[in-house]
Structures are given as structure tokens and as C-alpha cells.
Length: 161
Image (cartoon, rainbow, N blue to C red):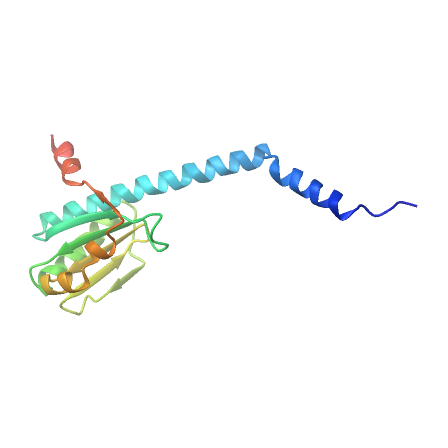
């Protein structure tokens, strides 16, 4: 008759099994890391492209923040200040068109009927269009102060030059 293994033996076996990495799990981790890196690269390219469009359509104080790792919602924020509600709606439309050219589509739009804050969610990138008063009041630049600032203007010059 077989005896039941002692609890200590079970704990040692479980610990040994979980401590030794399996080749498949290493490969899966490497694949997951590569996919995350690719996703960040694609999101970064979209964020920079959207920032360039916003700047070209008369938005000012355009900022791209990398919030991956600090935000569970998205990887990048594009913050921009518009000159009027009408101009902000035009920018929102132009951003949607630019994203479609890059095979992205907005999953959500909010505030397009308003006058102070419009939001477009492209999953990897969330764009916030503000009027000056709302930009100062909500102060997302400082709220997300731990985010890394993405230099996007140099990318613009590199593409043209």
C-alpha cells in the first residue's frame, strides 16, 4: 500500500517545479515582451502623427506623454489646446481621418458637442483637446507629471528633411 506524500515533500515539489523556468514559458515571455514593445512603437508613431496633425491645424501647446506603466487605460496621451470649439471639432475630425490612414479608428469620442474639452480614444493613444481655461483647470500635464515627455517635433523635421 502506498503512503501519502508528506506535506513538506509536496511543498518542495511545487517549489521546485515553479522555480525552474520552462523553455515554453521563456519563449512566451519573450513573445509577450516583443508584442508589448511593438505595441508601444506603433502607439508612439500614432501619437506623434496625431500631434503633428493637431499642430498643423492651429492647436497650440501640443504635448505627447508616454503613460504606459502608469496608466492602466492607454500608452500615450496627446494634449492640445484649441482656439475655438469649431476649430477643436475640425481638429477632432482631422485626427480621426489621420488615424484611419494608419489603420486605427476611434473607439470612443466625448465632448464633441461641448466647448471646453474633447476626447478621442484610439486605445493606444488618447487625445485631449482643450480650450485654454479647461487646460489650465484640469492640468493634465502636471497630473501625469511622472509620464515621460515624447519629443515629437524632431520627428516632424526628420520626416521632412
